[in-house]
Length: 346
Image (cartoon, rainbow, N blue to C red; front, top):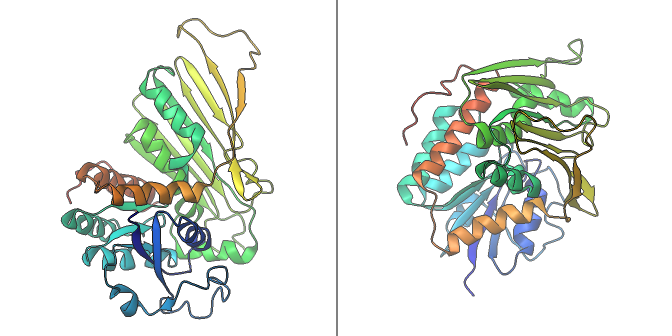
């Protein structure tokens, strides 16, 4: 069976290790031909590839010269992602890059234009795209089961050490850029382009650093208001990750959004549905609660990426424009001047 010949460029991203482990373990889909440490990564994560000694450590030039190379997974530090993704795209490779795409709309869109020009597959590390309850809810919305959706409320927080929170100083928007990108990606999938984006990003310890480790962004739509909240200093923040989608006929509460389960993820959802928007449910209705089966968020991403390559289904222009739109919304939520409603051409 044909497999995708792939390299990983970079070990500096937070998701670099689980993504590397994923492509290395999906033997039926990937032939991992090499790993590259880019300049500046020589001494970080020294045991990174210890679990897969069969995969050679190569220079960037050696890796990009591998005969028959088809794809590259970009896992450098966040602000270098788009540079190496563009390098791979310009060589005609399929590209998977981790989120959120850089703090430059122009550079991100140039990279997407190269993907389009070469007719390749593009993937990006928005892990919630493969969340079982979110995907079920998107289907229910398309079928009209929630009626007219007017609000999405989403939380995605952590409880980090000072060192990690100081690390956020390199990004305008801090946690909104780092984690809020996942939530904005799903908000766009549900409600599309907002009329207005109102960013409120702040530091919880301004006496120590200027890192915006607390973010709250409001999104105004013609019929409603939505928000995302992210924090890097929230005790219990991981367990309190959640999403609530409200419509005229139903509400879906996904909480916890993710929970560890022996190295996998599980989630719980509670749903309320009514048949008539003018007939409320009984006060105190508990709804219906469910738990999904354990799943691997990283395997799901890479299975999708590989199958599109193997089936010859390159990313369509409309899909790439969607990626650019989400990226512009993220930058606007970070407080950066960005025409998130404007025309996008690739």
